[in-house]
Image (cartoon, rainbow, N blue to C red; front, side, top):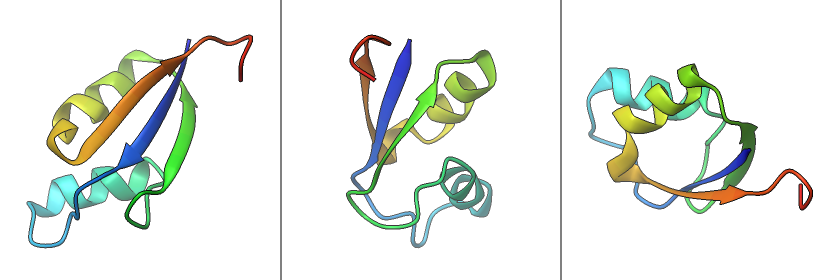
Length: 63
């Protein structure tokens, strides 16, 4: 399964570890969307900063 991750809230002023996590996901600007394959490590990163993100599952056929 592919996850489409969008940054919907700014990481400015957040916990430094959360800011690094957002950067590690490849999200550098507001409303930027990236696609990643769903892995346990990625799901853990998303859970850490889920209050900043919007996540949508995309079937692999669409990707």
